[in-house]
Length: 193
Image 1 (cartoon, rainbow, N blue to C red):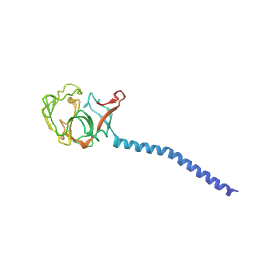
Image 2: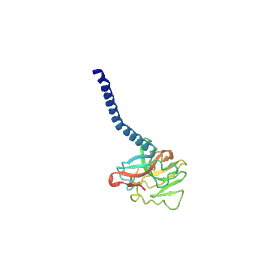
Image 3: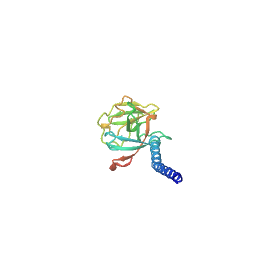
Image 4: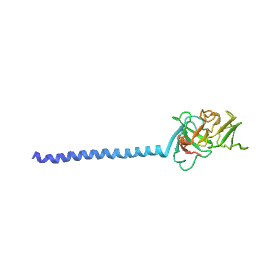
């Protein structure tokens, strides 16, 4: 009689082991899928960045965290006024967030706190600046290479930007995305313009 019970016991043990494996897989598979989706989004769709300083005030405040759109420049190029996330040209390990001022092939002159593009008589309209520009107001002359952009912070009186960098131009292939949304802190949540 014990020999007849042995196959039932083996079946029960095998069934219990399979149930445990199914239960483990029911937890592991969704986690692995969620991780794969998150990695795909992070590497191909969005980019996360923060601004630790006041260089982009009042558009982006110190400590704000934001999400950028990696696909924004797949079919078009950055435009003047866009806020972009890019690799800092003097140390590509660092990500910076600044505003596009000079486009490929343009000359940019800064005189007395105003920006002139391609020798224009009228300065660039910059209604996003934090305050009157009184620090490092010029004279600066930039000749933006055909594959690059000139970036400045919105808080010109307190921004480490192209005026001070050893390599003042950001190549287009180093622009990782267009800043889109502030998501932290909660009171600053909103779309960037």
